[in-house]
Length: 448
Image: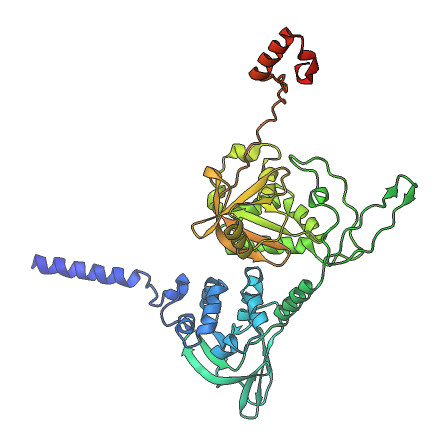
C-alpha cells in the first residue's frame, strides 16, 4: 500500500513538471537560420535550371540567399538554360565572369528574385504591378499580363509555378533580365577599353645653344607615356628623389583611383589576400600612388602574396621605416602581364628578369612544375592564383610566398694593373750575344 501511494506521488510530480516546462517548437529550422532539404534554395540547386545554379555558386550568393529565405517567402524568375548559355552575348557573359566584376554578377542574379511570393493566383488579371527585387540598387520589376501571357519586365513566363515550396516559388522565364546598373557597368568597361591613355605633357624644354623653346612633337595615343615610371613615382624607399612629373593631359580618360579601388575590392571578395589589401590602404599610401600612375597611362602587374605567406613575416620586417613600401615595390612590375604571357615567356626564354618599382632590383621568373616560379632558392614563390584581376591596365597575380630582394654585392676597388715587360726569346738573346763578340750586333735592329 505504501509503495502504491509513493508511485502515485512520483507520477503526479512528473505530470505537473511536464506541464510547467516551456514547449520547444517543432520547426526550429527557421529560428536557427538553417535551410532544410525542402527549401526553395535547395530546390533551385537541384532543378533543371543548371546554368542559373552554377552562376549563383560562382557569385558567392549562397549565404546571402540563405539569409533571404529565412526572412522572406521569395519568388525566383529562372531563365532557361539556353538563355544563359547560348542566347546571352558572349562578350557580356565574359564580362560577368571576370573576377573584377563580381558585384555586377551578384546584382544581375539578385534582380531575378523578389522578397515576396507571387504565384499564378495572386499574379493579377489585367493589372500592372511593380515589385522590388533583392537587388535594391535597380529599378522595380514590372509584372503584367498580355492576353494569355504573363510578363515580367517584358519577358514572357514560359513555365508558371514550375517549382513550388513552402518558403518560395520558381517561375521559368524566356530570357535573362538585365538591370540598368549592370548594363551601364558593361558599357562603361567596354568604352574604357577603346579609349587610349592621355600622355603626360612635361615642362617646356629649352635649347641651350639658342636659348629658345624646343618645339614639341604632337603626341600620339599609340605611344607609351613619355616620363619614365620611376620619375612619375613619388620619392620612396631606395628611390632617388625623382623630378615632379609633368601635368597630364586636359582630360584623364583613366580613373586610376577607381581602378585601384576596384582591384582591392576584388582581392577582398576573392578571399585570402586581406593582409596585402590592408598594407596598400591602411599601412601605406601605395594605393593612392598606384592610382595616380594608372591615371597617367602607366600599366602595372602586382604579384600579390596571399595571407598565408604574409603571416610568415615577422613584425621586425614590417616595423622598420619604409619596409612595407620596399616590399610592395619589389612585387610590382611596370608592365602588363597575364598568367598566359608570363608562362609563354618562361617557356620560350627560360629565365626572364622583370623590372620592379624598386630600382636596381629585378625579379626572376622561370618555369617550374608547369607553372611560373618567381625568385630563386628559398625565397621563391609560385604563381598560385592566376589572373585574379585583369582590366587592361592593372593585372593581379596571386603567389604563395613573399619575395625577398637579394642584396647586391658591394663594389670592390679596382685592382692595379701590373704590366710585365716583354722578355726576349732565349734563342734571340744567345744570337745577339755571339754577334756582339764579333762586333756585328749593330747591324741587327732586333738586338738593340
